[in-house]
Length: 228
Image 1 (spheres, one colour):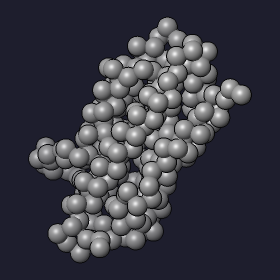
Image 2 (image 1 turned 180 degrees about the horizontal axis):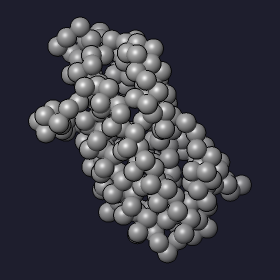
Image 3 (image 1 turned 90 degrees about the horizontal axis):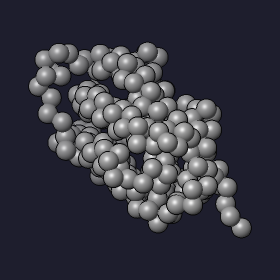
Image 4 (image 1 turned 135 degrees about the horizontal axis):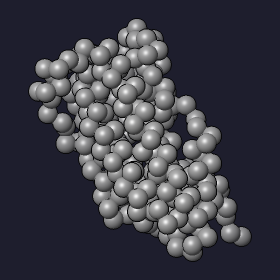
């Protein structure tokens, strides 16, 4: 029996769920053991990620203009990244990120491999398969953001405004879910949705997501935040 778009989204997200042990930085932060200097690095790295992803999703919306459900979903993602960029600045300010540090910061290759692959997908990926892979990754990202937001309030005394960036991604968005379902249905209706390709895209996205967090964890290794 053929699966519906909703079922395909759910099963794909389940299959691509990351290994809980793959992310060592978020548990470190959840214990309040990450340094504020590393939090500042997180803010600075996210500035690069958000700007790159917004352009990538906008380009995917342009590529799929002939298939409105796909274009609508990618447009919504691009618009969401623009909103997130504004919220990120309050987090950066709470971390003590000033102009001099922003200028001096050298992006970490491990953190920037994720947006580099999203840009590759924007140029080369099959759009419907990209929807499924990105949707699955967002599920993991949202969970991390919920944990980070809680830790920032609990252990670091950050305000709601400073946590708004992570709250934004942690909160479920029914409208975005509806658009994702419609986008996947458009792929199914077109008869060109390759699940093997979905899992290839998704596996790489999850690997680069894990590398993002691992690169931040490595900043803690020389100090007291090192984990066994």
